[in-house]
Image (cartoon, rainbow, N blue to C red; front, side, top):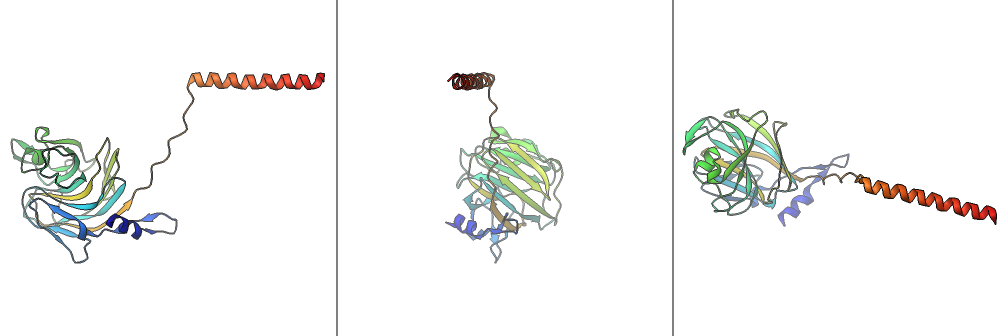
Length: 257
């Protein structure tokens, strides 16, 4: 029902294009050991704790939707992860089997759990939940987190304390695009499960997600007309020839008559 309310709130500009409506975070749900504090306007939320992986997810499906806003680490006391989950289903944070996407950003290179978490922005697929382990820490496939791509310009770049970043996420069943400060960081094709949007934190306190908006993506363009196969061309040419011969015969009969 809330999804329908959001759809009704989408405005239109003078040229008829949809304009994103503010997202009501009052119906979003926290999962994991985080402390997600909503602002009074229910359009921003702050995760205040330094702890194990936690998410704050929407009540609407992510596929076919665009989610935008800003994110800022409002502290200089840590250097770990914040980000997003896409296609997340309730309970998947601690599930033995899951299938969702993780976008996370680390501030420094840091070793633990038998590997090194690299600074920068990454896109990964999560197949067995997110715990305080090598999967969430350094994207270890053996622990159910497989890295798919690094950010185009931020793949090895640290986020900056107290700096506000804009984000724009577009998610479909076959593609995910993520822009940071209007720069395309990911454009990845695949086959993706549907589920919810969510904000993500791991061992990073005082992260503020604000000015959140969502809107339906435009439908994909129709496929181009199919080009006839060579055999089809042959049949078409033969059909044209037969039609021409028939027309000529009819013309002769009319003249003879």
